[in-house]
Every structure is written in C-alpha cells, then in structure tokens.
Amino acid sequence: MRLYSTKSKENFVSLEEAVFKGLPDDNGLYMPEAIPQLPDAFLKSLKGQSFQDIGFEICRHLFQGVIPDSDLRSIIGNAINFPAPIVRLDDETYVLELFHGPSLAFKDFGARFMAQLMSYFNRGNGRELVILVATSGDTGGAVAAGFYKTPGIKVVVLYPSDKVSHLQEKQLTTLGENITAIEVDGTFDDCQALVKQAFLDRDLTMNIRLSSANSINIARLIPQSFYYFEAYKQLPDDGRPVVFCVPSGNFGNLTAGLFAKKMGLPVHQFIAATNSNDIVPAYLNTGEYRPRPSVPTLSNAMDVGNPSNFARMFDLFGSTWNNFRQDIKGYAFSDAQTEAAMRQVFSEHNGYVIDPHGAVGILALRAYQTAAKEPMKGVVLETAHPAKFLPDVERILGRRIVVPERLAVLAEREKHAVRLGTDFGTFKEWLVANF
Image 1 (cartoon, rainbow, N blue to C red):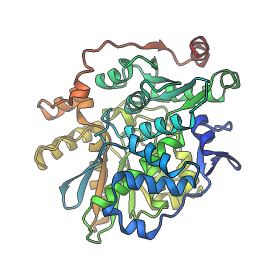
Image 2 (cartoon, helix red, strand yellow):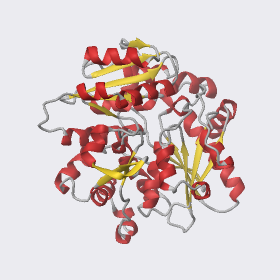
Image 3 (cartoon, rainbow, N blue to C red):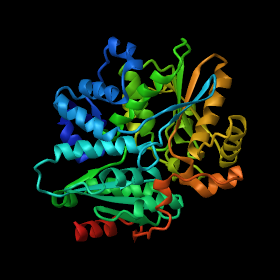
C-alpha cells in the first residue's frame, strides 16, 4: 500500500510512514494511492459476516499484504471489540449507535485501531513516540483511552478551555500515566493549528518523534469505514435506497463513508449535517469554500471552522464542485432547532434519548427526506452517548439521564491539565522541555 499527499501526487510513502508521520511535509493529507473495489461475493454476503470479518476484508484489500493476515486479524480483533447496533425509530429513520466503546463516542473505533496499528509498527523501536491530538470534545477521550499505558507511546491532548462538556474534560484530564492534557485558551481551531505547526516545525520533528491521532491521520479514517458496512448489513433488505446522514465537524467521519462507497457499498446519498459552523453546507450551495473562526454551540464536537478533511473530500471528487454536491447534500441548524429535535425524538419515539450531535443529524435527514419525496432507509450516525452532555440533555428533556458507570466514575476524579495560550512558541517550548 502506498499513500500520497493531497498537495502532491508524485511522492509516495508507505503505510507505516504515513501512520507515524500523520501529516506530510507539504501540509497536505495522506490518501491511499488506490481505494480497491471489494469483491461482489463479499458485498452480497454482508449479513453473514461479523463486524470483525468486515474490518479484516476491508483492510486486507486496502493494505495489499503490508501486514500478514494473522496479525491483521489480531489488530482488528483487539480494536473492534464492541458493537455498532442499528436502532429503528420508524420505517424510514434508523440510528447507528457508535457510542458503545470505552469512551462512549464514535472516535473509539479510529483511536483503538490506530493504537493497535502503531503498536504493531512500533515493535522493537527504542525511541519514544509522542502523539499530539487536538480535540473539540470526543477525539481526545477516545485517543486517551485507546493509548492508555501503551508502552513506548505518550499522548498530548489539546482541548479548548470551557468549550468541552464537564465529563468530556474529565476523560481527558484524569487518566495520567502516559496521557497529558493541555487546556488551551482558545478554540478547537487554535488547538488544531498548534498541532499542525508542530508537525511542520523541522526543529521539533528532528528532535522529537511526533505523530498525530486526529482525523488527519489516515489510520483514524480506515476503521471508520467499517461501520458503514456494519450498518448496511443490519437494515431491511427491501430494495429502498440507503442514505447516511453524518453529523460533521472535521469531516473525517463523512470522508470514511465516501471511502466505503468507493469500495462498493451501495450508498444512495450522504448528508452533511452541521450546526452554525456551516462551512461545508455553504460550499455545497455556492461553490465557494470560506473557512472562518468557529463559534461555540450546543453540539460542541462539531464546532470546527476549517475542517481538515475537506482536502480529502476535494481530492476524492477531483476538485469538481458538481461532483462534490452530487454525492453530498448539506444542511445546517441552530441550537434552538437542535433542542426542539431532541425533545421531539424523545416524545415521538418511546423516550429515545439522542444527543445534540445526533439531533442535528435527525434534522438534516428530515430536511432531505422532505425534499426528496421518495422512499428510503435513512441512517443517522449517533456519534456520542447523551450522558456525555448531561447538563444540557437533562435541561432540554426535563428529566434525569442514566450515566453509564464507566463515565460516572470520572465525575469525582481530580483534573490535571497544563494551561497554555495559543502562541506556538510557548507550546514548542513546553514540548522541548517535556520530551
């Protein structure tokens, strides 16, 4: 398997180099040289395949022998050891619950797979690996859980001060061991900029072995494609087209869906659902990509003003706006609309509790279904457990929400975080002093 940069298709790197390096020197993003079409026989037999079998088949074709089959099965078995069930709300609306992993967010799939892959490639390397990750909410907790106590690897999580939920912050700041949290006085975009600058700083990369765990790392995207196939196999086999609605911030999740379609999954349409940070829906409507500073919203993990994975989507569609908007429809909604949707889902669907991000997805799916006026199976990706946003969810629904034990135990743990501003020089000094 070879990969190229979205800014240069002439220079290729190996999977191992792409995974450890995270970001090419030219500040592009790594993309596979080829995304293989999966065999028809496999696609027709999806309902008889386990989740792990699906992941293995995808990776076996994509990796092209880079990792022996036995090791690959072990990597996937250790990483993808929790389910991604479909919940039916009504005949045209389904929810894909992606919060059954250790950190209760969809980021667990990518983070755990990447941890296993890095551990495999890192065998026998005596030099410490430092992973930098920026988070708008869920990524940091998943990466921290995925890499916790992994030998030879340390993780630095940057998160925006006062812009993640209380329990999200506890997931980042209470583990200790090889996990360090940095509380940044700024936005997620500021955190992401610090991470990118670190990778482009030759002095740092010459002296510290750095890698990334954000969705800019190709190792995060690959396993996220697994659950599109897993969702498809659980839907009724009745001939209606399948539509996936993806609550979107940095757009790694939707990009993984596009990978799945390239591999042969028969997806009729993707829907990009955003909050007030509507950069991609605006692009789909106007053809002009205009990133801007993010604004805080109820669905905080989607508060991204310059989505990194837009470059990958742009690459997949050959830089053609018409191709782009043919496969993806975009919708954006306010916090008031999000709250109303959460209450409506709870009222109309037997007390089903959906989190603010999933509620944005419900709104976008309904908007698309109203415009399309055709039968379909619409799947909304529910990206995090509602309990991660406990105060808001309980306020909006007017009732107490049961908190899973593995999240509840964090509430009383002491927070440990390094407080920094947005100046890269200060961040660089901290890295040099600590690694």
